[in-house]
Length: 269
Ligand SMILES: NC(=O)c1ccc[n+]([C@@H]2O[C@H](COP(=O)([O-])OP(=O)(O)OC[C@H]3O[C@@H](n4cnc5c(N)ncnc54)[C@H](O)[C@@H]3O)[C@@H](O)[C@H]2O)c1
Image 1 (cartoon, protein in one colour):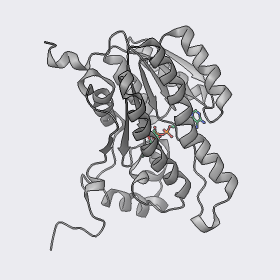
Image 2 (tube, rainbow, N blue to C red; image 1 turned 120 degrees about the vertical axis):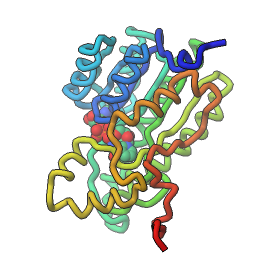
Image 3 (spheres, helix red, strand yellow; image 1 turned 30 degrees about the vertical axis):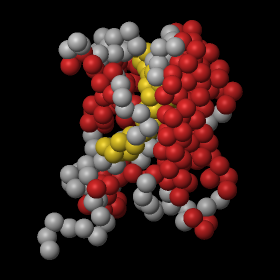
Image 4 (tube, protein in one colour; image 1 turned 60 degrees about the horizontal axis):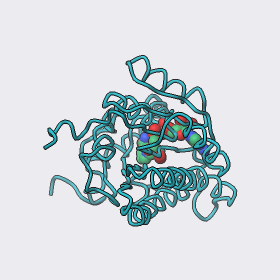
């Protein structure tokens, strides 16, 4: 029998993180590397990707940085051809999120809608398709983890209709892909984060004019605070590793209790 802690060992595996230069990608990349994986960081911003890869290397891990815009099919195909030259892929983590343009649904410009769907949903599909083709061919199974959001199962408002629709789409895409690829031992799961501190939230937290919004967000999280990127490592390591060998097709909230709480609920009565 395998010792329980060994279930989380990723030695000999290669993980690709799209949008890997971001806040969550950075923490997850280092976490997976510390569990033994080689990490390939893909980002539309080469600086972001390099920053994460250099940090992994500085901690003694193996990492590569690749600049690519994953909202475009041929770029995804070209990038996976580059990945093929580095290593077979065992783990794919989709963590892209593009800056949002916000409008009420009745005024949302179609060009902005198309842009958000391309960057925040189509990119997830293109990467999943390219990774699964390779995992099926190699015959060793794999794990695909998609970053959805609490915004994919509930309405956040604030002009985020296209983002919410993309996140809802990710959850259903996850179910369909998990069903189709289970026969190849490829597991596909979604994580639903609440608000986690990233560059955007850091700016809002330091801006007195945004204090109302930040407090409103925290009041929706029973744990009373936003998540720290490092708190995403455990859930991702679980889903990426053999510890979750029978887990596929799920949407796992990592949300401090946000989705468990009714918006009208309170502790006192
Ligand atoms: N942080 C949160 O509060 C939060 C909440 C819910 C869901 N999420 C989801 O978690 C994931 C990671 O979030 P984060 O906070 O690390 O975001 P982030 O903004 O810190 O990082 C996202 C990264 O995606 C990259 N990117 C944008 N468009 C791209 C494209 N077309 N091709 C390749 N890379 C592209 C950006 O350059 C950036 O480095 C995202 O999918 C996000 O929607 C985050």
